[in-house]
Image (cartoon, rainbow, N blue to C red; front, side, top):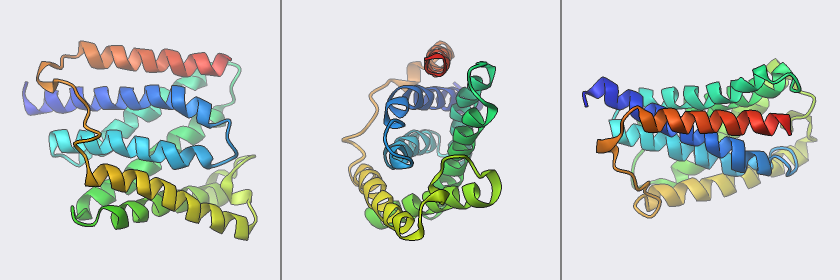
Length: 206
């Protein structure tokens, strides 16, 4: 396949897988107290974005992969039982994640796994809190926590997400996704995206 088609298929595939994960594991984790799901879902999103980047060698795939996952989240707008902000907020959070990972990919040094992982983990959650405080002001959000509690949460989130991402960066072979991308057609990515949309909209109807 030529470069543009390869890029598109990989972006669709990883974006769809991310969408499935958000609609399944992410749905379950959101029953935890506010903010805790992000400690685990950010590393998962990082995994899909960074893998797309490594497969193509193009940093733009980080953002494109996030766009696919965010678009899947936005299908909740077509579910009458959900408000618009319940779909828009997660989608915007995904875009914020991509911006942090995009910046990380520019400066990443392979011998500084955990330091880099901690920096992006803290950066993402700080950007999210600031966006909640000054832009979106959701009914529930980390920005509503008292300052000492918020600082404690930021520290814990940085440690948990940083350890997960740092371990992946240090031992990528252990977490390698076993798939023959040479045989990747449009069928697999489209099927994955359809499954993600069904899971996402199904959760919204529960």
